[in-house]
Length: 491
Image 1 (tube, rainbow, N blue to C red):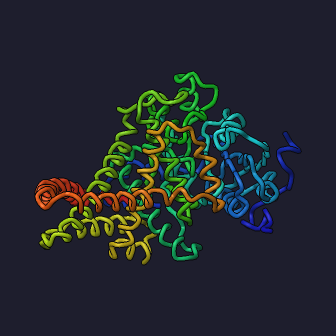
Image 2 (image 1 turned 180 degrees about the vertical axis):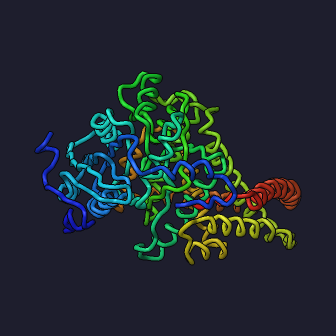
Image 3 (image 1 turned 60 degrees about the vertical axis):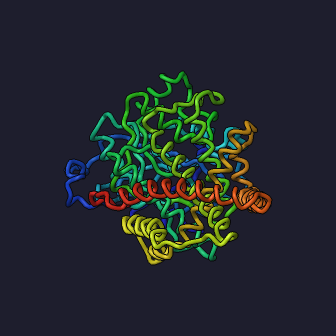
């Protein structure tokens, strides 16, 4: 086991638990001049930060998470590890770091204390752990939320605090997230990680180019003004910042902070590596939970306090994402259907123009990959080989279909429990869209054979122009993203 005192030569640790005590973006284009000026004055603390780490079965990562926090240039004033519903050694490992720590960094000598809270069985899961942590740090200026598998760069807290302190309008700031793919083993795991890295990069870049307005202050590594949390709670008649009515508690809180009159931002400098999904079942369950929760936020009249806010500024990107996935689904299914029909009656005529959309898509993926600060060969290959990105898109389409199907069915499902089960290797639900797609393909083939040549020709005559128009519009949108200036941002 790694000793708590081994992470830095200037750290002192005393082992006891709470139960006993009860990077950066380029600035040559001028986008970050003001922020860079603020960073010049970071020699002293101007605020207090309480860190909360909700942890559920994080024995493999919790030590690295705490060490990364203790190794920050700006160490949080207190660190609370809130362990809930755990069945592994998370508490034992985290407790080795509990106690006071004196740390010497570039900003001078700092003091922090680590507490480990095992709250046992918690029906509210992560939301309950976060609210428990909030009750411990609500007197601080800022709450730093960190997931139990997120490893932050050494200056992440310093960058977040510096910007937050510089503007009282800021209610919360998110770090830039990616996944460290170096430890990943296995073909499927590497493929999924490459896709998720591209997905994170595209999402972060979109938010950067929207004035660094962050639609979702992700729980992975974000700092919140406790004043903003209190105002959001008061406005929504809540006794806690996070509520259990939503599948995406971080998205809902971000909406509430924004509605309370605060800014929700993404930092151009603070970075953190999050835990990715390395199995199809785990990735499917996570994405379905996120998409399902986002639909609830968009759609009026949902359960509990999630009343639906379809025109909220933070949800515009969500609408575009869902509309984009619907378009991707339509174009691909319609193209394959019409292609098979044309081949069956000898009416297929190839046109080189068909190569333009995939080429534009490949170039766009390549440009997104090039915006990654830690881009590697695997990211480039994922983009330029085209087929990995196309397969990954089909996987994302399956999540989109499953999420909307589950939502429209009004079936009450514990998506948190389903994700936990999938991460343990259980469940085959992620294959359902593929089975349905094959069944639809067989049905269409039978219908195609049954209708006469006149009907077949009419379907092709009407279908191809429709697919062509939609594809042209989709390609123009991709091209506009391809040529858009990125202002030196690195994600």
